[in-house]
Image 1 (cartoon, rainbow, N blue to C red):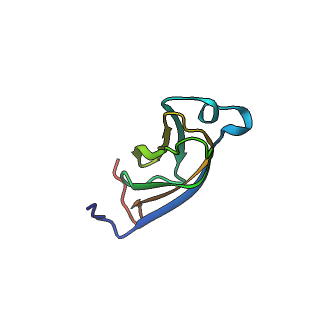
Image 2: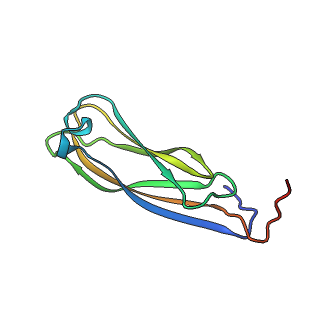
Image 3: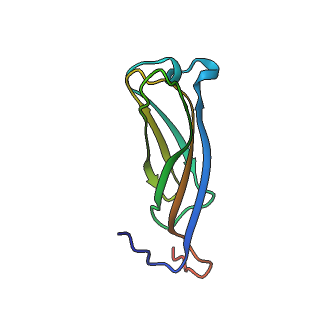
Amino acid sequence: MRRLSSHLTGVERGSIVLFSDYQDGGAMWTGNGPRELRRIVEFSEPFRAEPVVHVSISMWDMDQKTNQRADISAEMVNPEGFVIVFRTWGDTRVARVRADWLAIGEVASDDDWVID
């Protein structure tokens, strides 16, 4: 369990359409085998340390004629942001995906002293 040492906890959330590959014949819709897509997310202000980030699929549009396979995660998490990673494989055809995310962590206070 992560324990926050600060009395100030920041929570930021967002939603992002990762791709709409059916519109332009992109790899998630037309490809086969392992495929991966990465999107950088930047926080509106930095956290004091690496926050906890949760990512979920909030909308998916997949071809019903193939197996539905998907993996979504947050990687490279740091105080300034993170990377959403979406993966699929095999014959799965993904038309589009929207991801929602939530970051929770310590934030700086106006009363914090900065010593240079």
